[in-house]
Image (cartoon, rainbow, N blue to C red):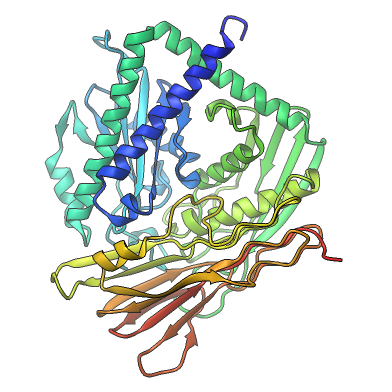
Length: 530
């Protein structure tokens, strides 16, 4: 690092981060669907010419740690040409779950006439419908074929020319083609802004200097992470936690699904082993390896200082093992819709639980541990057009050793917002009847866990509803004697009938006047109350 000036290194760290952030701003402002422009369910990142991440926006943790595998898949599929844009969503070919569509574009140096790109840029967005058996494309599936259209790495743009046949094929297989086309165009716009800013950087500073400082950022991140690991006591730290069930399509209570981890620390190196986790399940809660890597990346980012470059160097000293065929590294054709949103949360819970024995004064209790995925779709009675509504609902944050958990917040692998009431009621035949903090749902503790949310929706049209939620049976744990957070509850009230619980996972036909209430889990408490 002696050949690099530390001030200039920090300038480059912020330059690359600002480019990723600006890409996200463009995507948010130009997107068509409420899920992206209101909830901010998207992520953008910048990569070097080898596909190693340089910088990420402050977007969705579940996206960012897994995006390098999407870039790798695009690089393997095609020799990059200026003007190319590769599209993919296949969880078994670089993606995570089908609604997350990723676009990848190469960036060439202004002086290049041929050769390899100097950068790649990528944008990923959760599309609120990609076909499949249920509106919203978050079904209680038993195989990936039920979840929507699978897109292997394909060129959406080749040398700057749109592949209209491919786009037409994609739009023919979704319920809301206008939304999908608008959101894809916004993703392309984000890539173009990223490309423009990177080219300007190279023109201003020269490719040699830029590449030198990229390598410096990778090495600095690796060195910082090694020092952090060296501060953790040597040894093996183990934990297990459970999914309520495997996400079966029927509403019977299933068997809990174990996720187990062993974290081995030896000096400056760490090995994270999920081999003893349960086999992949028949339902939709299977995570692919990219999701497991993403959870590890997120937890390490939480431990690292804020000023550390969020680059590939962070995980160079980390080995992650997850046996193929388990719920944390599923084989084709497993259902994966819920692995990205629910199993990812449990992966974080179990990693933090294991680390709490090594770093008891730094690790918080479990947060709500679910994204509370809600999808509603049908035909809008006013427009006669199909609609598809999807959102995740926040919950309680786990308390830490020295502060209580926040209430009514998206935690860990999600960094999105709840859909604003005004936007939801404007776009969809739904009325919000209640939206408040679920008082008393956080676990007791010296610092108390954060409270969850109560969100009640009145349905104004015939539609199909799918709810995919966790922590309805297995409560978020407390630490150091702190109490567990309250599990969540889902309740359906017909127009002329009694309230009834519908379980954590349900697919139902709803009609006008039906009322759905989602009460989300609270976070665990920290420390025994004396």
